[in-house]
Image 1: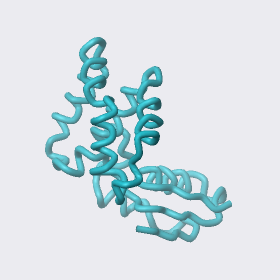
Image 2: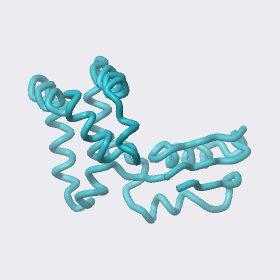
Image 3: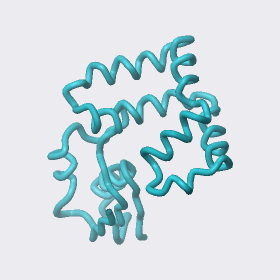
Length: 144
């Protein structure tokens, strides 16, 4: 079967293909990355700060308050226009409402905090990411 992975999911897909080499006929990776937004923007040398942010968001009461500040529709819309969509015209009020509804799910702050701070990064370095590729994988196509 062909398998598709986008952004950080691409690295998870490559890792799965390494563990189960006969499970996939071909991998298609769309804009693959291996690292969360804060480590990408601020650099990995601030890992201690990212861990502290993640723990603060995971903490009772404080975490709810911090998360609440970041999931207001205006904040979500601004982030989508600045960092997610190449064309800000695609960010409509109804799309923002859909994304906001997702953020209101029980426990959503934990995954969000881990994602943004690099807590879900499959490997620690670019070299480790590139090392995932090579012999033993099915054919790989990368789309940027």
